[in-house]
Amino acid sequence: MDYLREIIDLMNSQANKDIELVSKAFTFSESVHSGQLRFSGEPYFIHVRETAKILAELGMSSTTIAAGLLHDCIEDGKATREEVEELFGKEILFLVEGVTKLGKLKYRGVERHNESLRKLFVAVSQDIRVIIIKLSDRLHNMRTLEYVPEHKQKRIATETLEIYAPLAYRLGIRKLSRPLEDHAFPFVYPEEYKKTKELLKTRNKEQFHKLDRFQKSIKKVLAKKNITEFTVDYRMKTLYSLYKKLARKDWNIEKIYDISALRIIVPSIEDCYRVFGIVHSTYRPLPGRIKDYIAFPKPNGYKALHTTIFTGYGNVVEIQIKTKQMHQESEYGIASHVGYKESVVENFSWIKKLLPFKNILSEKKEINFEDVPSWIKDLVEFQKTSGLEDEMRSDFFQQRIFVFTPKGDVVDLPINSTPIDFAYSIHSSIGDHIGGAKINGKMTSIETILNNGDIVEIVTKKQRSSKKKWLDHVKTASAKKHIKAAITKTN
Ligand code: MN
Image 1 (cartoon, rainbow, N blue to C red):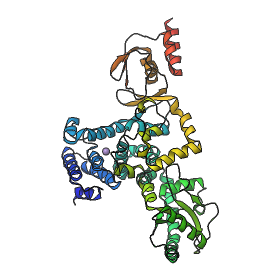
Image 2: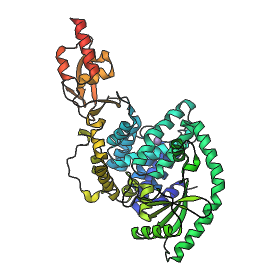
Image 3: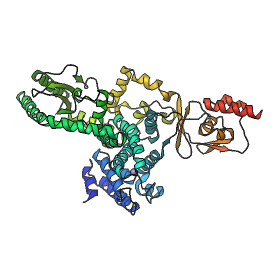
């Protein structure tokens, strides 16, 4: 099997330079990973090759696919960063190192919010392509999770379910969020997984041929009304999303109408509404289930018309009507824009703008809204009109900053915190013995206000050093408490 050929065939661009780049990365990666094995006993190279294939399937460019092939070559393989830069350039090195950095991120905050970890992820990666590579990497790791030692499985699967899958969903990449969820599901909730699977099996047996008959009849109806350019297909609800819905509906599968849905894809928005009209004048709709996500897209940018109708075969079915572009965007989300216009959206200033981070993402350039994909603009609009924006602004992030230990551990602190707060949040004995502080490698006063993204190192000394005046330079309650205790002791 020619795996390189397979990746190349999936690529949008068949230009020589793109094929050459991916081929070169393929060969290089294969050689630097030679002799390494995964838990499954398979050669390590299979993992990076499959990651690259997922990226190609998402429509990513040769640069990102090459970075996917190289994503573990410095950390786990035999390559050096100098080699990668010399052979593949600064941009690919930046992507590879970004993925490595994300892999090292261990959240050790005072407040362990999953939402903050997701946002932190975006902030640290700085380039959306880094996240897309990381998500693809995680998808392949999930596909092979059964080979990982059992005690690690649940942690990895939980992290996938709580951090990675929601992140993929937020970016609109259902092509990644759905399989991430479904692979994680049995490891995190084994009982619920079995129960859901059983329910769905029984249900599908009953439904399948009814749906097939209905599909044929709807095609006839549309043809009669001179709608000729359309495709009809099914989509089945994935197990994990069915489970989430079941859990909300007292496990009553009869209350879930969109286990299977019929998708009608047409060329234009106008066609969507025409088909919608035909469907409603032919079949009786179920009240309360008519949704115009074209006029009012979902927060993640999803657009379509949804309705649930009585088929006449004794069942109800959800019908989704959308254009090809809407369908494409609902499957690939941000990836569908990155892939085609990678150079334009390289800096992703707009996604940073969406996040309520301060310094780490401070914008020097004005944002050119021409470059912003429409569904993101819609998202911004939606947030404004729905008040979601206020919610985001009032959120935790307005009051917190994230700084790093030299090892890459993340510590979250209130805004205006100093190295003294940092030291006490690591350990009270470090706080009590501060000798000095390095911020981003430079010796600095311990009273310096920290900024998002700073790397902080505390130099300790033997004797206790806590001083009363420190109280004016700390924000955290724990630092205050410990300083007071320390000065009482010495007096
Ligand atoms: Mn990897």
